Length: 118
Image (cartoon, rainbow, N blue to C red; front, side, top):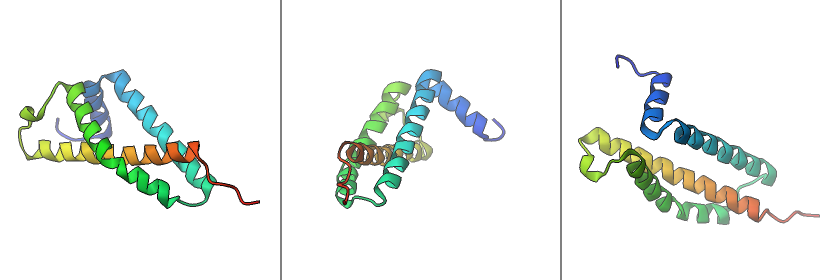
């Protein structure tokens, strides 16, 4: 691999996760992001109580993302080979944490929308 391009990254992720799982995750991420934007536009503000509860879900999301990647790729902590592996693992954990927070906030806002002023 002489250069890193966007299509190369997509090919690597498809190889790692499988075509259907990878694109399913992409569709799920886009759907949750669109719902999150919808909730922010609809509510006109951020509910700090819901935001705090969403932040409490971040460690769970980080751990779940790491476990998911290890399960799907048939890898484990014993397969960590160097600093780049640790950096990638931390990136996976960070993405899982942020994703969990966005998902929890969105679900809370969809289930319990703010009361409308009359």
